Every structure is written in C-alpha cells, then in structure tokens.
Length: 252
Image (cartoon, rainbow, N blue to C red; front, side, top):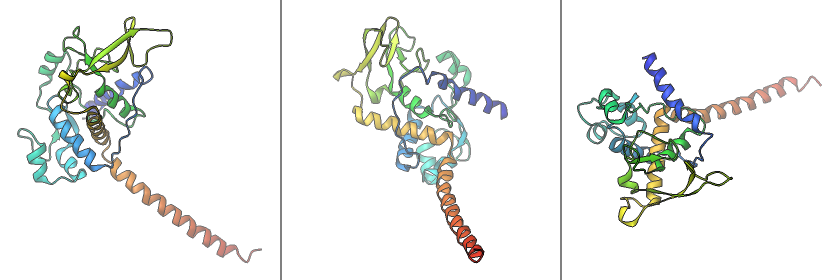
C-alpha cells in the first residue's frame, strides 16, 4: 500500500513541473457545491472511469459526501460487479493500457493533491486538446504536448482544431509548435459537439471540482470544522480578556 501511494504521488507531481511553462486558465471551482460535484462524478464515470482508477476512494464515501443514497450509487454509479464498499478501480488491465496507449493510464486519486495551481492545470488540460494527425491517437494537447491520452470529451466539445501563426519575439500566447504559435482554436459548425462552449466549460469545471474533491475528501469537513474552531477561539479569547480584566481591575 505504501509503495502504491508513493507512485501515485509521483504521478500527481508530474504536471507541477509544467506549471511555469504554460498559460493556465483560472478554474473557479467550489468543492462545497454538491450539485457541481455530482455532475462531475457523472462525467467521470461516463468518460474517465473506463481507463482511470480512483484507488484511494470508495463508492460508499463518494455517495455519503455527495448526498447520494446507497441505491443511487449502486444503480447509477457502480458499473460491473463492484460492491459499494470497494475502491473505485477501473476494469482495464495495466497490460492492455500499456499496449493501447504505450503506458497504463495513471490513477487519478491524487492528481489534484494540495498543489497550488493543480486544479487550473487539470482544467486547462481538459480544454486544450486539438486535432493533430501526426499523432498516433490523432490528438495533441497544448498543456502536455505529446500526451498519450486521446480527447475522450470530443463528443461534448466538438472537434477542436488549432490555428497557427509564425512565432514572434514576444513568445506564444497559448503554445509553441516548432516555429509556429498556436494562436487559438476553432470548431467548425459541422464538427460541433453536443454542448455549447459555455456548457462545455461548465462541464469541465464540474469534472475538475470532482477530481479536486477526490484528492482530499476530508477537505469538506475540514473547512467546515475550521469555521467553528475560529468562532470558538474568538469566543474563548473574549472570555479570557474579560477574566483578565476582572482579575486586574483592582491592581491599579
């Protein structure tokens, strides 16, 4: 278990090295927005769970934190023969993942684990796939160039194509590819996805929020408890000050 946690942590740290080299979009997520987390869970199970595990998260914990009944989790979330008390493990064998993608898809339990900017990285990464016919999967990504992962969300986003312009001395606004800069993205009307750009943006925010919650589920209770701790300390400080004033009122 310790070894698996160590490697999961290494996988979570990989994107951090790229944080300073890309222009990340701000991800205004709210892990206390239960509806957003529920939508993100649905997106994860439909588009991510076939390849990526959440080995440190159990179905029962997700259901409890997100306000879902046991019946809802078993009927709507769990796929296959998994039990509600089991970890959220993908059914894909590592050997198959390696054969299909050149490396097994990583576990995502700690992808957004307490690192400043990690949620922005994930949010930007999921929005930044574009068609690249030179790649085996037919896709590339401006945040993680040469990523083995295909754009599994193209059905929602549409087929996004990059627009290029010659690289100048001021650098590139989005990303550099050879001697050119990616200046933007375009989705042709006949290649549009099921969601509008605004709806897709909302969906990616929900998915990012869910992955942020998964990385530290105790955050929901910790931040709520923290408010009561601050209130208690403030009240105790007031009592201590009143007691001190009472003890010392006759000294002068």
